[in-house]
Length: 134
Image: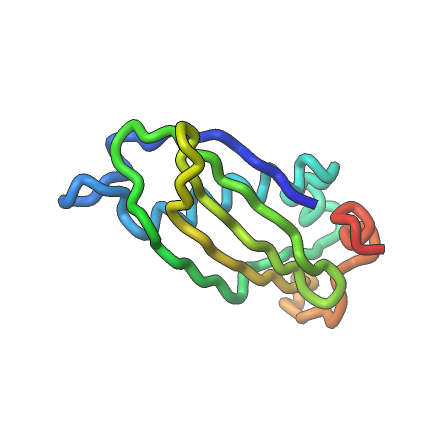
């Protein structure tokens, strides 16, 4: 399953070199991640309230290829690769005008039971099914 969202770089996301500050790419990934869950019919906030289970990001990596600049319109794509023992998502950011790949990334999320903060060894079956891995 994948999800794409078109975004535009605002001025406040730039660093002193007038390119997107590296930490903002994680924000873009999060926007795509939550869109992907919403597209799958899962509201992560409501799920955490109802089920007392959260899905913290436990690992991520980012490969910067070409920097984004002010007012660049870009597409952030999130693709789920695994959703049984962990949720593994690949990300790609590319310029909307020509498809130039700017950034690639990966993240992993685990399932944690609240309030105990107890790690679960499987993703709940309803989430696994919603993400297309059942």
